[in-house]
Image 1 (cartoon, rainbow, N blue to C red):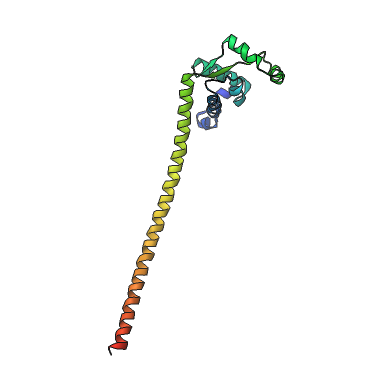
Image 2 (cartoon, rainbow, N blue to C red):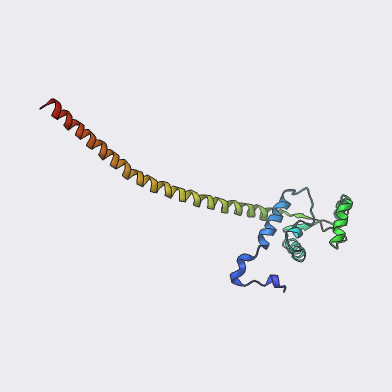
Length: 168
């Protein structure tokens, strides 16, 4: 095992592999089912772990590799600059892949999970604002009662003053 694969229990929140792979899979969804990709998942992770992640995702049937014939077709579309970059990375040719039907389901679930987390956070913020509004309305209730009492006293004093002026 590599050192990066050994994580102590209290350090588990420092592992960002899943978040990076999730982002890469969402990128793959953008072109499903028409486009084939290479190097997307690998760019989100270290080279070694990127290759390992690609193999694992293919084994789990989240992504599928292009056939040899399809790879040849896709390789013909690469520019000289892309070929040079691959050579610098030590690769003879790119490993083409795309999401499978199962992969689309996984990505959709990940997007829904992210949306649910955002909605939960929004709901918590709304709840906090609602509590503040309730506290404010309770303060205003006291002020309103005080104003009613003050108005009633003013009315009584005005009535008493009128009584003294006109009826005495």
